[in-house]
Image (cartoon, rainbow, N blue to C red; front, side):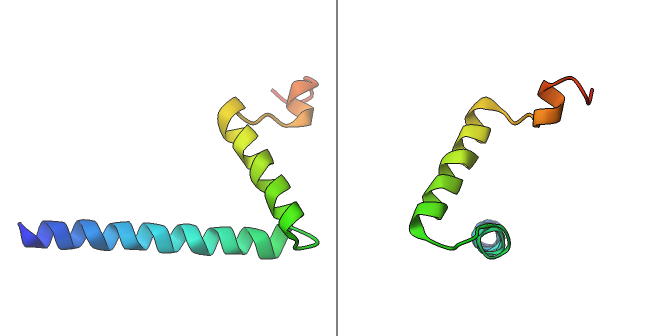
Length: 65
């Protein structure tokens, strides 16, 4: 039973570490200039995509199906 909990804890820690690395990569690669305002705007946009779903501008215009 303790092996199962150790494996679950290891998976949880690895998931958090992966999320941290991906968020850092996003900030370094895509947000210019790196400011608190830009970070908050990006987080607001990402939240909107999560809630409402994301569609590209071309798809809304009917160019892509």
